[in-house]
Length: 333
Image (tube, rainbow, N blue to C red; front, side, top):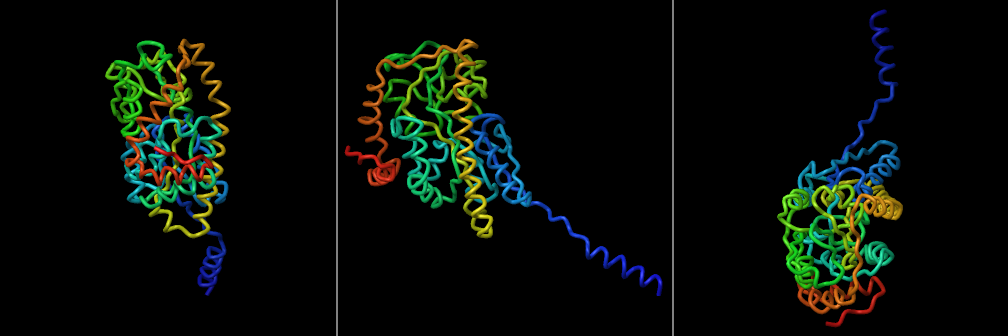
């Protein structure tokens, strides 16, 4: 009887003890290194999700293409085997062509316009396209205009682009843009870009100061940078729609809100550190140039690239639907 009483007491004590709930972990793939502007949105997202869920949900971020290149990780997000990824917008376009609207040259003329174009009604419209293809855009990192860097000479006018080979992502719009500007574009995956620059396969690439710094492009012969404002580079944090639909409404709302907060944090990161990166890179020897004829670049974009890419990005109706959401006048080709 004493043994039975002791067993009963121990069992009762065990039942009274709170059981630790194991956190649900979701993986995020990031192409760039930790500390980059691309990574700024995932660093913030990880923090907000874990804080808002009181540790019930964990986010594990894999940097530097550890889970594959951007196309591979996006495909895995689409089919639901990976929950989240961050990728350059041009690499998402092959999965949903209407997202190509965001890559049209001279769509935005400033950071303020880029922010406006990725919040509120414009963001809701773009996300509705993404969802149709198995993605849900939770937020964006802001990566600056795609400034042009190269190993051969300063570029101050369009004629300087002649005979130069530039790495571009697999983007029909960017390929058309570089051809319109007089250069030779070569699609190369992001994970192979540094080596291609270092070995002279291409002369240059296009990204902002922070990406240049974190990717150490100075060590890949990139001596010259030109501030040209043909496209503002954004990188969406996407979630698998298949994974999203399996969540409770509470967790769906949590992820959406965490993404919104992370986007604001990424913007703050960009504003705080971009100028610092520029100043440091100039001290280290980067030669920065400014265009003498940017209106000529803009004219080439609007008269050559937009008409050529109209169908590729979903047609004039889709373009004007987005421009309307932005509060901009319609495009009449």
